[in-house]
Length: 128
Image 1 (tube, rainbow, N blue to C red):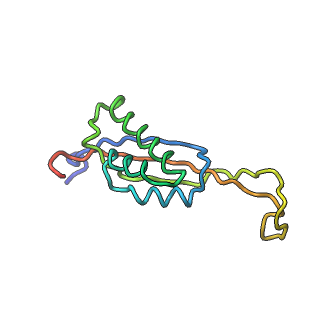
Image 2 (tube, rainbow, N blue to C red):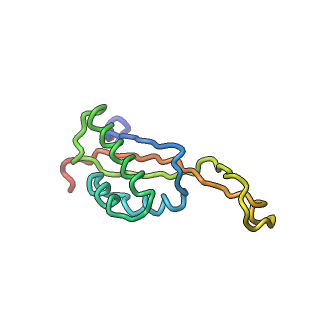
Image 3 (cartoon, rainbow, N blue to C red):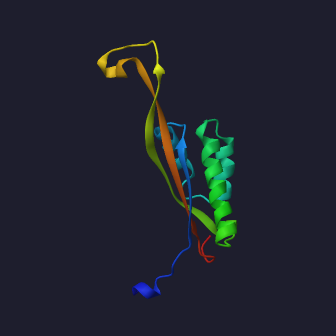
């Protein structure tokens, strides 16, 4: 197939930056819902007990809203292509009284932030 014959799938992107959750824990949730339809992914995330699950569900809802309002796509034809959870800046909390060795950050506790990027893709109607 030449480049002009390849069908151009419609891609929808939603982002959330500076989310106050550990990226490592958010990636675990993202792997659980990858390659699902967004509606079923949101339903499964709302059932999970983790704190970051609702945040990830909100980003998925935002992506579905972008698809519906901006690109006139039906939510039934969408599939989660990828969910990227990148590490944001590390915010130092106030100095706290705990172990002060060199390996422990000299008594400063670090709060990690996440950047979430959800990519939805239109699935062709012939597949199910």
